[in-house]
Length: 142
Image (cartoon, rainbow, N blue to C red; front, side, top):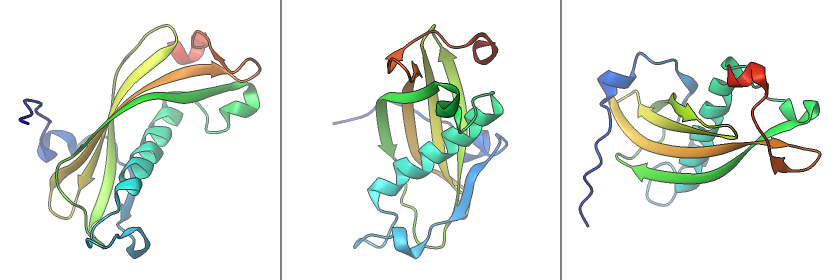
């Protein structure tokens, strides 16, 4: 199977705000000697969460009756991250509709200056009382 998808280079992404900056911890290593697959998504999600705070969506938004639920992910592994490698998440919000938003999260291997992982995510605005989708609040939509 051949993929025709192209991704931005490290140099094209490195100047975006960095989130979840950290070295790959030994506890996240798998038997292959690199970051275990389950942690790529967790770190990328953490980076997305931090970026959304800057857009006006507080981390404790459920206490205010709102939440974001993930609806869809597409994951691409481009280069392995190994224990001790410095990594960071960079986020591009691609757009939003009345009730959903679309983002790309890139995990950068800052040690080797390369893109390691890409997570494309569709997420939904949820009203916690009904646990159903609803239009974004005006302040967040703006």
